[in-house]
Image (tube, rainbow, N blue to C red; front, side):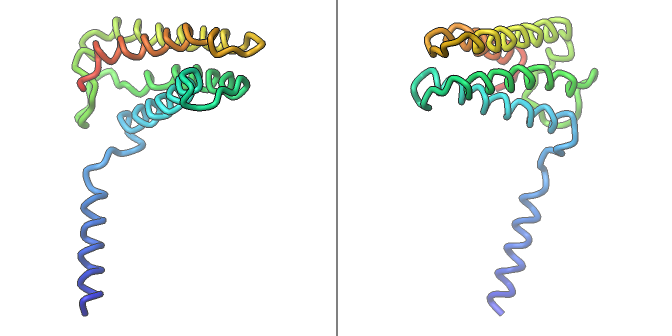
Length: 149
């Protein structure tokens, strides 16, 4: 009898945990997934340059291409009108759309430059640092202006 009660309680807890999550097919869910992929990819690239991960030139170049492709994706998942879902985006995303789009293009340009820098051989971590810093700066600037931490 105790096992049956425990099972019911566990099932109830699991059901409640599933409630209140972000719909992965919603615009918010889509862009969050992309931003998480961007963060992971960027952390791996930065980790290679900072010695946290062993530097691997070809792997770094592949990561730069991936980050560049991802950098073009999240913007289409910001609807013209702010959604009702809880989002970390400030109202300024919708109130200052031209500025938001300008910062998105800056990130895309920075990741494009990173791809170019990562194609120079021989691979040298020291040559890639400025391009990675430019990407990180673009991310940080947008977060400061448009993300509600």
